[in-house]
Image (cartoon, helix red, strand yellow):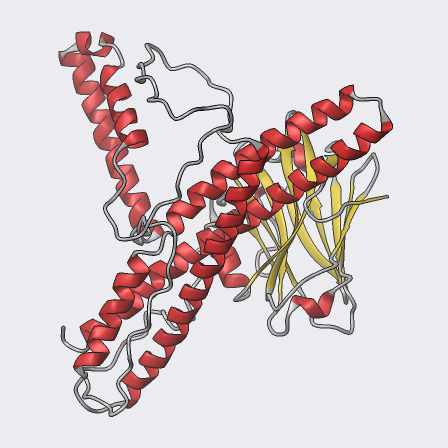
Length: 441
């Protein structure tokens, strides 16, 4: 049996059934083991592909969950029968109380029908109430297992929402009816000072999943009708070169950034490039596949990764502060019988303004770019390892490859956390706006 460290991956035989077993000390808290079958976009195709205690099987039984004994859960997977739209299986667990730091030593084992079993043991955890242990993902014509060990605060809800599962909101931003406008209390809240960040694009506005789906379907129908009309009445238009598409793509890719008071992540100058004026871009005459590239050298990648980590911590602190503040103000709003003070309304408006300027989307994009660079770094180092025979150089390349894999794993964790924080920010914005509306403003 091969044990994988956090962030490592290894091929897994996909012939027949793969049995994934999760064990933890039976005298500790009971784990709710779950499995998300997600597509390339990182979301489940439908709620049928969320396997948990109330829905222990995916369609066709290709994924089945059971709990044969205390301190043990088992997931049986038939990879060859999974539909093409399923890109990976995410295996996680949640606690109803307590934290995963009390479950150090929990072990996941993936045993294929033929081939070597793979294992991952939890060696570090904090106060998270949900944790992704590992994922089975497609790799070429086969499958691989990646050890993840990433925790989520808040339990199963933020974890499920991250993968597109609709969960009733039970936190302070839930859609609980707010009492009528009330009068001022002597201790009116003081708006907090903003936390300085290094980038500016405001988070995207929140849209409910059902509303977004309806709009996408409507748009698809209108586009299909328009295309049919063009084909029937003006077929020559379809032969026009892709100039309009190229122009639209350039506008989206190179449009001017939004005007804000904070600075966006600054692009680093790629290695070997001077400060002379870059040549003008030429528009391609046809759409062709382009291999992924990284505009930075290894040193710049790690420098930008550290900047990303610092801003991720600041964003996390800001969102947690706003969440506590919203809960406090909601309680004051419910207890008070007087009219809302001006400072209360101003405080909620200032929170909305500051949260709207949080650069979550910008740093999510940065994490995605850096993750691609880490992947290219790993491929390059693996290629050099395969061609190298000198022991001293092999040792150095192994260390660098491990460092690159840890980088890729950390970037994946940060990107997922930022996705959760973006959703949380949207819910907080709704909550502060509801406070203002409850005051009659």
